[in-house]
Image (cartoon, rainbow, N blue to C red):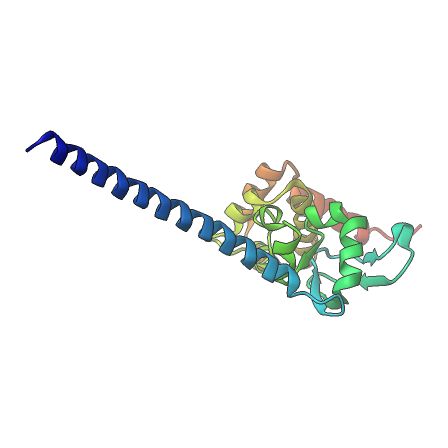
Length: 207
């Protein structure tokens, strides 16, 4: 093979390599563009007058408002699992005023587009849903302890209160004391003892 032929071969390989690199770069850029456009599509797909479902995950009255100190439009939830439809425009304001409530899992947004738009995916991966909490409250032996263990401190405190009420009010046959014991060790609160003390206090006659 002559020098001229070798040089031509090398040049051809370099050209092929350069073309492959360019194609790879183009594919990379196209992927980035597609991801960005998809994200923008999600954001643009939520009109301000769209109704978004919001669920309360606390067993007590929860008040949310569009302005600080309870001012503006108010939304009240009276029970665990209650769902209200809130205008997205109002919900965006609630995010600003009650972000800590959301991060602690006091209320849950039932709309994936809203979750993505506001960058809440990481937060929501750490929040137990109503279904998960129900598994703990019904003493699901396969998941109750693991789910409780994965909950945030704020949600554990809420679940503790609900379990205390269950142990206090329900028949003994409806309670899995093994799960109660394990949960008490993880959360650091003796649920059985607290429930018994509350029951005794309620049974005392008024003076």
